[in-house]
Image (tube, rainbow over all chains, first blue to last red):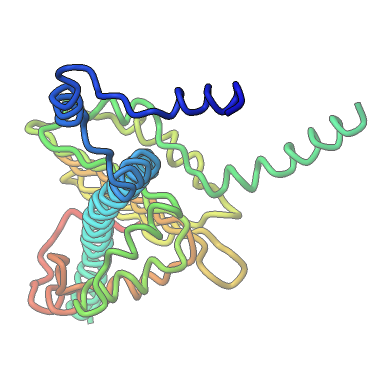
Length: 115
Length: 187
């Protein structure tokens, strides 16, 4: 047997583990947290990427809804103002026309009396 | 420099046309609101009219009629004041409005003065053969109203609203009223 073979035999010869090796291994194994599943990691990555987009979308949709609400309110106010304006304009035109007609009738009655 | 001159000339020519469309309500009229028991201030330009028009229902006959009436208008302006006592405004308050309603653009079609101090004036803005605008000034002892309808309008269409929306029906009320309103004089 050569010296190299002797060294190899010594290196590969069976050795008993030190005392308490098994319990140490079992303790370490129980303390080690299980590896996070891949799908869970992906979900978090997705949430972190989507959250700002969703927030931006929420702001945009909220803003659009608020603008629509404002527009409806302004429109309703404008409509009420318009109806009021038409009512006043119509009433005042009516007054003027009524006065003119009344004067015409008075004059016509006067002419009939003279005749 | 030349461009500036061209723009200046364009603005100078455009100004009278702009001024025609915008009758300026005198500032002192707005001050009347403080003395008034009730005041109405309606300012609706073309964009606001368009917006208001969109909210008028097609199913409601009155609103449908108003929608049709205002479809061509450029603006509707109303200032109306009601006072609890007489003498709260002076006729000079109206002078600055009247000064803007001069011929040949404007013509007064109705001018009624009464001894009771109930005066009505109706002015029409000529736009060729069509009517380009309408101004009504109604001055009563305790009430003052100025209405300016800017744009093509048929007063007949407006009077057709009589009997609706709280506007008295012209034909009916005139027929039923006896001609005893003395002291009135038509100009």
